[in-house]
Length: 262
Image (cartoon, rainbow, N blue to C red; front, side, top):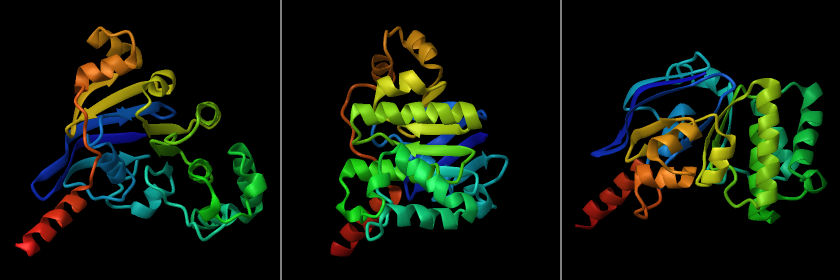
């Protein structure tokens, strides 16, 4: 369902993603883990057509996203790490606008929106402006929106960030159920190692732009001789605190500003 070969992304002299290769099978739940700044979000942005690779090959649902952006976007849903809702619209308006963009048929649009807003327990607040929502409510709305058009692949970039344990558990139960019933492929990142250990069929760990290990959670624990995935992760990536991942574009802008001040 996802094929990546020798994928590289450079921003000037900075290499954010360095010649990585991996495959994700249909209906697989695939965890893509790494420390801050490792290249996770940059990789997702390339997979979802938001960034063009410097080099390498990508295939999503049999489609080359570099050549057929609109067609490949029909195949996936995405929950971004950064907020992406229109806060001047209500929850229902956000969902309906997304449904129109993805050409969800009018006859199923309303029941699908109602189903998903009920799932994230926001149906009673569907007519409230998103700007008045709490951070957790906004996150739940973004998750509901990502599933709206029955995507074949769902990309989840730290989807449970800011959610309480009950909501996290509820969301993953729903995703697991969807994965089984509709054969939806799930590609996710998270910093919650116990979450990845529990739900991922396979995991790839990226660090400094390179894939440093891959396999099932049990294989990664066996490889490192650790009893849990968090210890295995630290063994593979080290325990040094990392900076948040900044885009190469941000780095280039900062350098440009510094140059102009000279």
